Length: 391
Image (cartoon, rainbow, N blue to C red; front, side, top):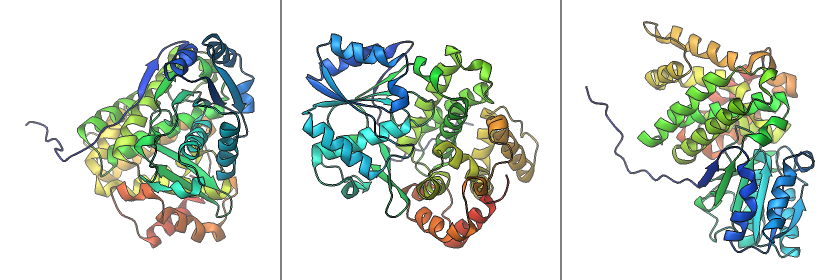
């Protein structure tokens, strides 16, 4: 029987991207193509001191492009950091941005670009399609294999005054060029490798289960999951393995383009709430809530979850839905290996008295809109109580 395709209207956006070893050296060429005389190089202190960063700065100088470095970017970039970076961009009369780092750096760079082009405070752009003017040219060089900020139309900016991670959505946020080079990934710590891989998986599974999915987003989501199944659990002997690093970059690329077009779900809404209150790494936050959310969602899309299991090489053939769910959860646990064993939100500062705030921030997070099953306040409250316990 022919496969029935979703023929509803769908848009599909993606940036230009260059893949392969040492693609970072094209930063100067692309900045020159944008006719930039001076760029803001957004990164962090750790990235600034890595061996591969010199290749980026040399490529800029060799292209005759001056640059100003901005490194005051935290694990969950804040509105204050964005505004400070935008002030540097303006004071130094920059005309483009090169962002080299993980998702935090790339999101902060997007925020800086929004304010540089549109003025005002970054808080005024929280929401969907509120960015009216295009950002300055943005060249992204991701240093982790998971955030997908280098290909997506989203930015997540934390607000310290209300302990919330805020989502900005706009096609203007899709970078102009992404240079997907596996070499910088060799210098990231092992736990970041694992959390980034989990982040990529959470993007892929939520895109595939999203009520905004399409045939195109499905293809990319499943391919991302297959790559992740072949790459994890991670072993530290793979740290300098460029084939492994390249495969994780591709997983992030596929998952990123998929969710950027299909949307996400409750995993990310809950994860954003956790990150806003406790500043936990995003990949870890997503892992902490993933089993509970999958159990909650499973009955709404059992066949699609079986597709995910198949892509993960977990056999659910002939199994009941209950058995298939257990097999999928067990397989997901295995992806994190020893890095995520015995984890709970309580291990990372989670407190039961914070649940009302966590639920409130989850229910107002835009990602919840494309979850396959719309949860109630009580549903989310119960899920957070479950997440507080050891997985």
